Each structure stands twice: as structure tokens, then as C-alpha cells.
Length: 104
Image 1 (spheres, rainbow, N blue to C red):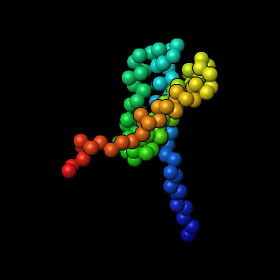
Image 2 (image 1 turned 60 degrees about the vertical axis):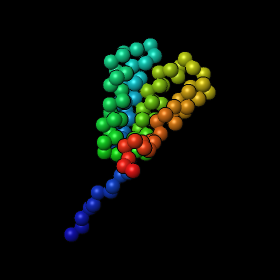
Image 3 (image 1 turned 180 degrees about the vertical axis):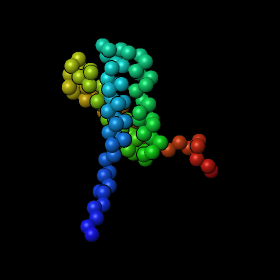
Image 4 (image 1 turned 135 degrees about the horizontal axis):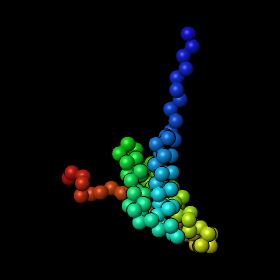
């Protein structure tokens, strides 16, 4: 009998959900929309995703959510300035080793 095994996909649906929900919340929390409550809720999907994913995928999710959420400022800034301001945030979102939490 022929059995079909599911193919493991490296791009998970939870990653896509965390990116899209966080990006939408960030999009409507800044710029002309300026809904301050959404600013506090925007990082929560990525933070919840961080419980089940490695640090590299979490950093990717945070960066993509930030870039997609910052698209509301794309019409106001020239494209080179928009690209520069969004990519300068990459070192802030990179995973770091926290030395105070690791045992000696």
C-alpha cells in the first residue's frame, strides 16, 4: 500500500502569522494613524513566536515585521532614505548572547 508522508516545510505558518500580525499592528500604530495602543501590542506576536523558534528566525521575524510595518512612511521619505533608516535597525534586532543569564 502506498503511503504519503508530509513534507516538512522550513518556512512555518507561525512565522508568517507573527510577521504579518506584528507588521499590521506596527503599520497602524505609527505615522498618521498614531494609535498608541497598537504600538504596545505590535511586538507581542514576535515575542510569542520566540518561545517556539530559534533566535535567528525570531530576529528575521522581528526585522521583517519592522520593515513591513514601516511601509506607512514610504510615501513621505525618499526611497534611499527609507531603505537606510530601516536597515540601520538590523543590529538592534540581531540576536545577542546575554552574559548575565549564562552560568559561569
